[in-house]
Length: 77
Figure 1: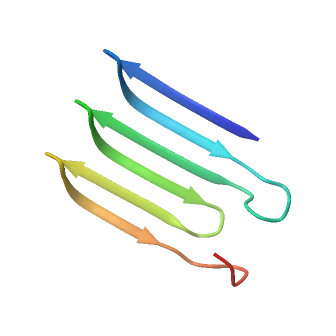
Figure 2: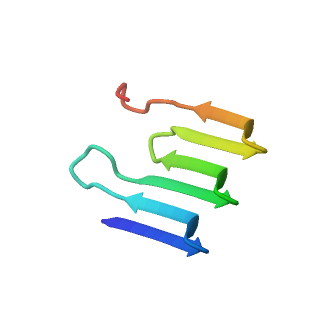
C-alpha cells in the first residue's frame, strides 16, 4: 500500500503526507508528514513501525526542535 496526499495554497505545498506499507517482512509501515508555511517547513515528522521517529520544527528558518529517536526491534535498521 502506498498513499500520498498533499495540499497546496497559492502554488505552494502546505501539507504533504506519505504512507506506505510492505508485507515482505521488511518495512511494514512508514509515515512521513510535513507542513510548510510561507514556503518554510514548519513541521516534519517521520514514523515507522520499527520505533524510529524523526521530528523537527522550524521557525524563522531556524530549527527550533529536532528530535531523532531510533531503536531496532530485530537487530536491523
